[in-house]
Structures are given as structure tokens and as C-alpha cells.
Image (cartoon, rainbow, N blue to C red; front, side, top):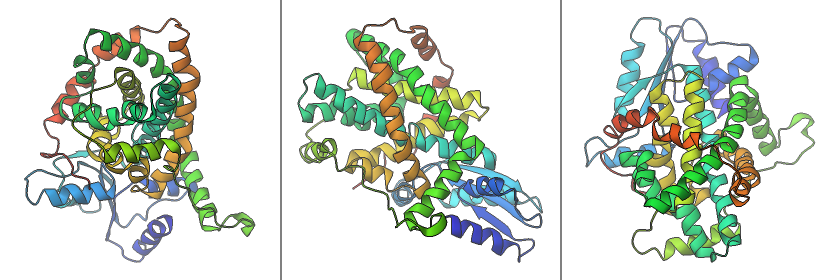
Length: 381
């Protein structure tokens, strides 16, 4: 990916007045790390679909039969030579089937996107699933029940509820006892999740994470400094017993399952922590919701629901695949070592976090966005 991006940037130098079109802000981050910039005699436009490539194509194809099916896009105008860049960007967004387009900046896009996929979109949800499966089996659940509670509950009813009616609706749909379990899990998991998310955001914003991606690419291709290493390709992420259990569970699905309240509390806590962090860093509300909520429930989780975590992660970009593998264990560890221990020891929890969740202004914004969601649920084979 990096070679093709840099190749595009070098080619544009020989075509003054041309338009450099990007589908991600990664190139700007790389140029920042080199102390370089785009040529001044070209326009630079980005149109970034808020979903992995296969889901963009899948919903575009569904849109041939159902009007409005598609993936939202963000667009950014980094340089505009003749004043037509915004029109070009919006037309591009319409062309890829986006139900709506929202404006951002190129730097804000790559920061929120690279961060988001390491958080709740990929790495975070993977870490949650792994940690909860171990917790539930340790509590005595059989393997299949544990997988349903840890994974199927997220990719099934929780995802569907958030997609159609929002995060708070997950809590609202529980009975009295379920709401208490949710609240305890939420309050115990919010800060441990925020801890890792804050570190990850800083690594992305500082350029460290982009440098890590570039170095990993060299290791995986055998092009490491000095050439002393053999190629080290990325390994599989779904060969463990847990994900083999998942294959059996998926093959035997029958009817709907219910929301597991503890799982819901953990998942919603991480999603809200990511929302709060992005808002605190000045990202626009549309970008925050897309990078923390919509992309998760309308693009990515359906792929894990269809065939497991590897099918979700490894259908994404190399940058995303690397980040998910790097950060998932960090979320897993923090939840196991801090959140779940606090629950088991019956330690006092920050109940103010639940009050903040219930009254959060983001819920109204999500309900508005839900009204502009794709007119169909993505169909993943």
C-alpha cells in the first residue's frame, strides 16, 4: 500500500494542475513523518468510505436493487487549485453509493480512522470477545454457551439494536436485573478501556503508529534493516479453540439469541469511551459516530458474525490488520486485570459513569444518524 501511495504522490509531481484522489489520509501521515508535503501545483482530495472494501462493494451492489444502500463517506479537501475540489469529492462519494457524505480534514481522518480500527472497530471488540470467552468458561459455562454469550451476543442482537436505534437502546431493552448487570460491567470496564484507547490515540497522533505499520510491512516482506530476518508474515487470528467453537456455533444457529447484559455493558463501555476520547480531541460528531459506532455495526461486526474474527479483520487493509493484532491483546489484558477483577472483588464502582452514559448527548446525534443509515442490512455470505 505504501509503495502505491508514494508512487501516486511522485507521479503527480509531473502533472501540474492534476487532482490527487485519496481514499485514506495515511499518505499525509507518512509525509509528515518524512517532513515532506504534497506538491503545491495540484489539488488533493480524499473520499474515505467508512467501512472495509468488501462491505463498500457489497452494499453498493445491494443498492442496485434497494435505493440508498451504501457506506457513508467522509471527504476532505487538502488543496484546491480551482475551487472545484468539494464538488468533485461529493460526486465521488455519490458514485461509490454513499447515503451521506460528511466533511473532515485529511489529518483528522487518518487519525480517527487508524485509531478507530485499533479500538472498538477491530482490536477492541476482538479483545473483548477473547476476554469474555475465558471469563464465562471459567465461571462454568460450556464452550458453546460461552461463545454465544461473548461473541454472538455482540455480533447479533447488540449490533442490530445499536444499528437501528442506538447504544442506549441496548440498556433500555434489558429487564431490571439485566440493567444492574449491565451497569456494573459498564462502570468497571469504561476506565480500563479508556486507558488503552488514550495510549493508542497518542501513538497514532504522534506518528508512532504509522511508523510501526511501515516497519511491520518491512518485516513481513523480509525487507527489514540489514536484511538479517526472513519474511515474517502475519499469522492467523482464529485458530484457537475459542474460534473453532465458533465455527460449530455458527453452523448450528437456530433463531435469535438474547443480549447478554454483562457482555453488553463491557462492549458499550468501550464504545462510549472511544466516543468520549474522540470528542475530547475535537473530532466532529459525524466523524466520531462513524468511526466508533456506524462502521462497527453496519460494516465490520456483520463479517465476524458470518465467519469469525479473521474474516472481519483480514478483509481490512494491511494497516488495520496490523493494528488489530497489536492492540487486541492490550484490551484483553486490561479488562481481565482491572475490570473483571473489580467486579469479582465487589470493589466500589464509579456509578457516575452510568449516569453520564444515560444522559450523554451523543444518543440524540446517533438517533439522527440512524435515520440516514443504509436502507438495508448488509448481507454477508
